[in-house]
Image (cartoon, rainbow, N blue to C red):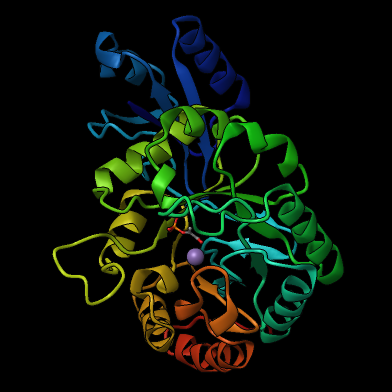
Length: 343
Ligand code: PEP
Ligand code: MN
């Protein structure tokens, strides 16, 4: 249930209403927007009547939310959620047309590899560095990531470049290693690991949640809701391709999910063109599609020597191709009144 308050409602009136509702066992999510203040009620609202709220002269209107995702819904939080980490901004603000660009290797492989790629993607204009330390591989015999050592190298790259870092957490047992990590990635394979989502939701950090390999949008949003119900405010939704009947690309990029999610939720939506197609030559084209469809950002895999990469080399861009893509995309974004590069 959503209660929209009239502009200029006195703070003490809001406080009284909120504490009355909390006493009745409801969780209240307050969204102070540009135009109105919205109270989102979570709990069994069937016993509440619209009239009881409208009896307060500061209540503008009351609506019942039928969707099962509430905290993630735009109805609960009409304004876009803007996520800030370091100098990066993820989410669309009226006065900021910049798309967020996350780039880096699939996996952290060595200090030299990571620092080289980190410097290159920074120079090309990326605002956030990615790199997997714990890798969810389809085969147990494939490189599983450098683990704790990989996190140390990411922290060193953060120190060296000033870029915030995003890396995947696969098990809650790893959380102590994530202190210096700016954004926790939950990978496609763990999108429905609800116990993990509940724990990560309590970590107090932004979360980048990738859509599951075969997840419906509803399931995706319910996973977001798990994070938010546990305490997360800043969740980035990442479309990385889904499995369909066709396998000519690694996955099928679901472009139309972007406007749909942006309409339905207040959270930033980004596209990962690398995992979507699995082929480096196609990544720039899909990145352009991400800009055209209005995504809030992109996440791209970049490797200093793709043929030698220990994971996902075939879909990784070289630093030169990435830098060229950033310049092209910036011009492309300008057509949409947006940009990728600073000034
Ligand atoms: C990754 O980002 O390297 C990754 C493993 O992605 P996904 O979970 O989308 O497969
Ligand atoms: Mn990868």
